[in-house]
Amino acid sequence: MSVQEEHPIARPGLLLAILPIAITIALLGIQLFYFGDFTPHTPLAIGIVITCAIAWCRGYRWKHMEKGLFHVIQVATSAIVIMLIIGMIIGSWIASGTVPMMIYYGFQVLTPKTFLAAAMILCAIISVSLGTSWTTVATVGLALMGVGEGFGIPTYWTAGAVVSGAFFGDKMSPLSDTTNLAPAVTGTHLFDHIRNMLPTTVPALCIAFAVYAVVGVTVIDTTQVDHIKIQAMTDALSQHFLFNGWVLMPAIVVFTLAILKMPAIPSLMTSVLVSLGIAIFVQGVPVHEALGFLQNGFSINTGNSNADALLNRGGIQSMAWILTLVLIALALGGVLEQTRCLETIVLSIMNRVRTIFGLQVASTLTAAGTNLVAGDPYLSIALPGRMYSQAYRGMGYSTLCLSRSVEEGGTLLSPLIPWNAGGALVIQALGLGIAEGNTENLLYIVCAVACWMSPVLGICYAYFGKFCPQASAKERQQWRDNHELIMTMSPQTQSEAETSAQKLPPLPS
Image (cartoon, rainbow, N blue to C red; front, side, top):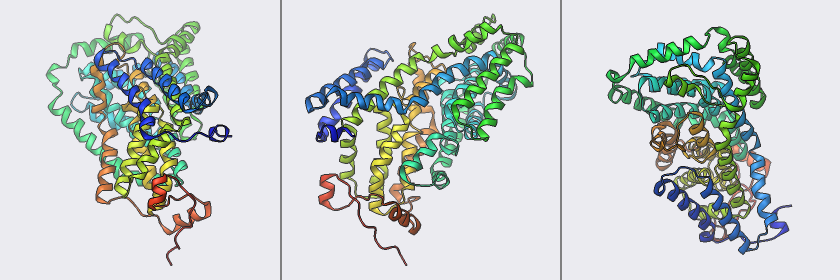
């Protein structure tokens, strides 16, 4: 039984729906820009209290708000479990020598001028193969951060290139959960959805590649590369780790299980166990010490401070900051959804939309806004995917346009919002140190060119009427067969912001 059935309460007005969100964002701004402290947990927690207080005054009681608060957390349980496993992966892949080997040979193969462009392409290829941006960031991305550090490249540029490649791959991989979620909630087919994303995603990746290539040539000063520092780091790695084919087995296992379409959680745990075995039997790590690395992260003293800074990380405990942040952000999003604040905002936007350009802008920005407020990339796809599909059908456009726009505002923008699950993981896994005061590394948001360029291109295409297909006869028939809802575009229905099931227009002969 829904909350509305148990306790019928009208949707809030637009100003009342926006009020708790505006106050929360203001508190976040004060915390970051006035106090210079990037710990968004408390402002988000206060936002939950404010949202609940307003909902209480509207007639909701705690059992109703609690239902929404915990429901969203429950839906995101798998993502939370994956975050914990990623903490173990970072610790175990370092202990097994997998990450150190990638860093070691990265210094041999890559050059400072080509590094950023090569890093993006490498992460894109691996992410498409694995179907997960998070694992790519936490493994190959972490190794590339070490190489970039050795080359003297600003941390935010390296992080931007890693994020661009990893989340491009996540968006385009048929193995990705978000890439499967978007067509599922909009009623389209997976491979049609992937093909329809090519006009925005591929040009965005090419533009990002060009930017990183130009930065490599014009900004990166190879004369400033400290070759003595690099040599010292590689010596430290080779002296403390044994490099051979067995060391790459954790990566090979992940690739193989991804190709076999095994679920993410057992695949990642298998990789953890394999890397644990390699750490014990190949690297000679004592069993108790290896198990400790899974809990508290890898720890070593190589005698080289730069190498130690790269290697001493990971473990379940390292994910505590990100997990508490994500749980609080999810709870806020759940309360806002349950008390119909998000519904009011979305329907208010839909009332003002008259063209496909407006619809594309609205759905993309709603996905981005849900990312911003709710902190969950899954909700940012599911919510606008559910709410806007009727409007696209009402205008006669294919819902492929919608599935692409929510991917662009959802999947690609999630790593650019620091308190979002995607952004928090990027900050923690890549060791950006934002909470420790290295706020300049937030520039990775600007440097992740492919992530924000793709939605920009999508909106530009909509403005010029390009790559926004009308619904085909086959799709219209599918709507008819599935009894899909279509928004009536009459002024009366728009003013009431309601949807109803309508008969479809006759199919073309």
